[in-house]
Image 1 (cartoon, helix red, strand yellow):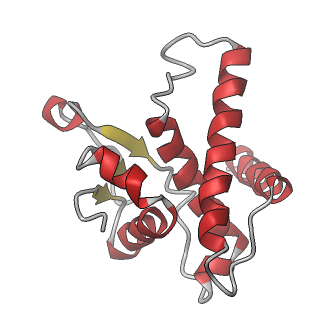
Image 2 (cartoon, rainbow, N blue to C red; image 1 turned 60 degrees about the vertical axis):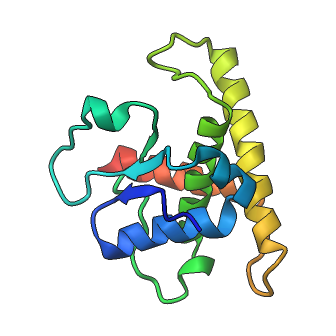
Length: 160
């Protein structure tokens, strides 16, 4: 179980879908390696959030955009937006697993950013598809599907 993961993403439903994505898709050995150091936050229920020094110390903090947290669809797990949300959560956990640097804060080159993104995409797809292979109804996620959904998410950001 991922009971030691702090999740504050704006409400019961949002917290539950983040927890479900982490518990169902991130391999147990990866979760246990974090042992209480993984946190997910968003600013969906407020205009801003301050993370205190004591909170930030020794934690891998993943900040999720409120736009990425899915609405209730009925068959959530199979909705393209929900599948992309799971991928994004896995992608960010993969960055934490690999101790990647921040492209904007650590002055990475374009080639270094591309290498990190490729590595995390591959790991997120692997985790997603390992879980999908254990279910009857969850089709595997493809690179093409991720790219299409990523472009749709970018278009929504630009359009707002």
